[in-house]
Image 1: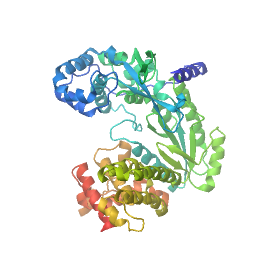
Image 2: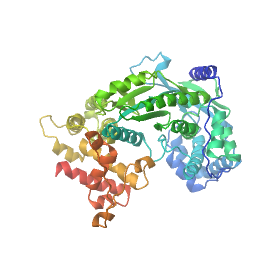
Image 3: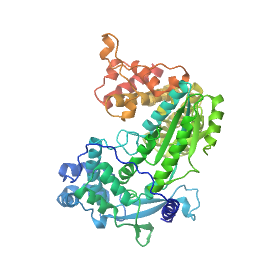
Image 4: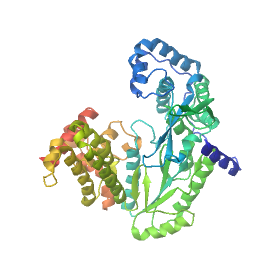
Length: 551
């Protein structure tokens, strides 16, 4: 809390003017004034969706609570619906318990900075929040309240779709002979410094909440407390005066709403951007000889900083990172121009968990993945004789494939030597799992495990994104990257779900999602492209891709 207080005090003391505050765009939103009571089926669905973790604030263990939920159902429905219809969140459910968790076992346990505070809330509060979340989220979608380029905590959105969009734009800029500048903005404790009064104004003016619904959020935010619990010791309760409730169902959604005006601030400067929760990245395209966009970028950052100060958010300029993409011989000129507006560039930076470099060859990221994967594989190998093969494979998927597959749709167009490094990790994992010797050929082992090789795993992810984009299961910005093929005259192929392949000039263009994805999509058999459901598509696609290296 001291850190949050210091941030807010620093912002208040350094902010002098009223600042620019965008107004919501004129829309015909019907206000949301009343929540609808939930029924028995909706309650059971909510219980199934919530995980079974418990905390000391719960009278009954959550797993047991779920088992006897049918008996408790009348009382549960009464509590939940009374909160929804009255527009009041129950006071006893506003207290959170904080459990300090050591970030790494190797860290000094006596240093408080080495602990991560884990916030837990009563299970009953999560049930009520989930009911509210469903209704508010549906209202936001129906009224197009969400920022199109906000991918955090939204259905069918992910870090992968966000990175795919941004890297696609940068690759196409480079293919056109232009330069790109990417700025990764860093916020300090953003979720914890959210001002409640400002948030309530957002809910009313930007979203359209009124009456009991708006009052429900007012009572939900006010008079919240937390205490720290370590072993058998607990602290005195401390009042929370700002921030969205940590560990809550509604916290991320409320933060997205709080940040809605930021998109308008960036758009007013004609700057491209993408956000994932509190991670915001802005980027520009530079044509040869044109330095106007650099000045616009500098003004945009100042406007963002001004808006954040007036909304009690702190932009950490020292941790903001800037990367230049494009022809190597032109990067120095752009870097010099950026230095004139106090922006220092770097050759690489971590962006949503992926290390991006100026050449977009992901060498540093692959090196980091390799180091981490082999570390975990070594530990798995040590305990392989103590576990069944089935349980061992679960560990491999959890610690190895989670790293190999994370955002691998951006690996399109990488050279074979880069893919080879990732393939060697998979090969090693297969040898550990099956106890295969190094001298034995690996292909039969991979085939016996039904594992797609790394190259096919990348194509699988790309094609999965295409299918989702074409079937309403992906963000609009992903759908906009693809164009249905319309022949000049009627042909047999006109109804087979083909995509237009744009013209590109360089390997950077060939690696862009908007080129690479349609190209491999059009090669698929029609029965795969026209699959009725996502699960059917996945099954047919894996069978098809599995036949490529092994048949």
